[in-house]
Amino acid sequence: MQELKRILSAEQPNINRALGCLTAELPQAARPVAEHLFAAGGKRLRPLLTLLTGRAFGCRDKGLYTMGAAIEMLHAATLLHDDILDDAATRRGQPTAHTLYGTAKVILAGDALLAKALLTVSAFGDTRLTASVSEAVMRTAVGEIAEFDILRDTGVSHQNYLEVVTGKTAWMLRASCELGALLAGVDEPLARAAADFGLELGVAFQMVDDALDFAPAETTGKPRGGDLREGKMTPPLLSYLASLSDDEARAFRAAFAEGAFSDEAVEAVSAAVVAGGHARRARDIAEEHLDRAAAALALFPESDERVVLRQLLGYIQHREH
Ligand code: FPP
Ligand code: MG
Image (cartoon, rainbow, N blue to C red):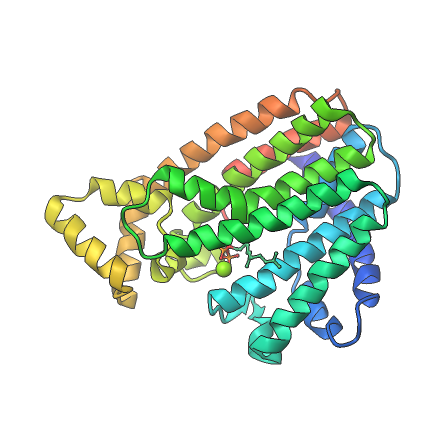
């Protein structure tokens, strides 16, 4: 994990510089919204993936930073819209943009960021890059629609859940990796390996996130049980529900469908999810996806970056916040 930490702290300033350049090119009307979100920080996981994947395939082009910044800008657009849809008050420890600038302005600023990202990718002049990123945008939006369709529904299956997370999270991570590989000029089978790596990593990343949603606020810095409150049926909850007696399950289903959990009930269910090993179970399923990501990574040529990408899988598996 040491090498991953070293690369992350060495590259974050470069990634942020590229992101700053792209942000400075935004029209004035959209810029403060973007600056507000970027100033709050973030892991910059997507640009890091573009950078590492590109380099793993031998690309030394500075364009990897610009590409990474474009994908981070796209991610920012989805977060701006997501916080409106979720009616979220905070993001990355700061007030959400729409609570400061108003919903209408932030929806439109999100659109501007989305367009700026696509414009940046199109400037590379390779339709494979534009196709990759455009498909990711479409799949992300459709994943978010799928999530809406099953909100407050206790009859959802693990398959339903997988469709949602593959769309809303994994496709953008897939594109982050595929864009790096394409910039390196690899042919179809290796671009596919990079895409598969990103997709499986993305599913696992979201699943671990959903397990962490039930962890005590002291460890994550986020209020516990947000998904339960928002009516999102995730693997830990599916596992918890399956463990209940008929009467308990009936009461849970009714409260979940109505969104009728009190703060105390959210706390009690969250504690029971962790104590019953259901968050752990979700992490075990995530591990299966990480194994598939590792299998795709094994198709990459040997390189220092491949070692770091392998460490990244370990980081995702064990992260505690
Ligand atoms: C976060 O999920 C949300 C996403 C990763 C995707 C959001 C996508 C959209 C709103 C639609 C597409 C928008 C554009 C501009 C293409 P979460 O709510 O589970 O996680 P959180 O805890 O970070 O909010
Ligand atoms: Mg959200």
